Image (cartoon, rainbow, N blue to C red; front, side, top):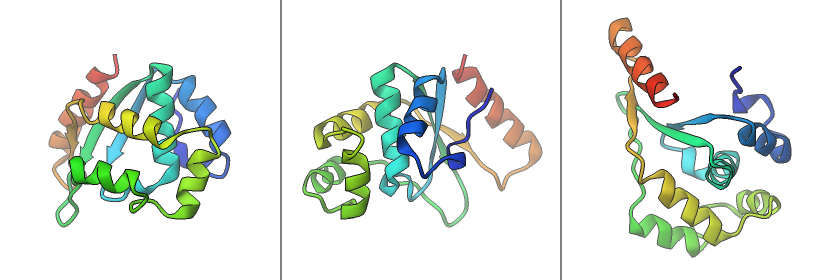
Length: 136
């Protein structure tokens, strides 16, 4: 079975239950992923639940994911990266800033795999095969 998080974005508690029941979580690294509260909640939940995380960089012309560096974590702790509403959604799930930072640091210790939706079918198929191999 495959669970797609966009199916229940209105209920973060239910979303966390789906993550906990998963064997793998593929995180699509796109420019806005680290500003979306549900994505952050999913990553923390996966780390805390021992769910295997497979980071995948979506490579498209004109769209670049910037891997977090120390300045990112400093800004996160200072409350300059997330809106008040986004942080409220996260903290309502009982997630602390320290827990969020720790989970993100663990995610970004993992080697990300590429996925290039604009490339040929042969390249995309090879990339998907590599992603699925990581999900053993």
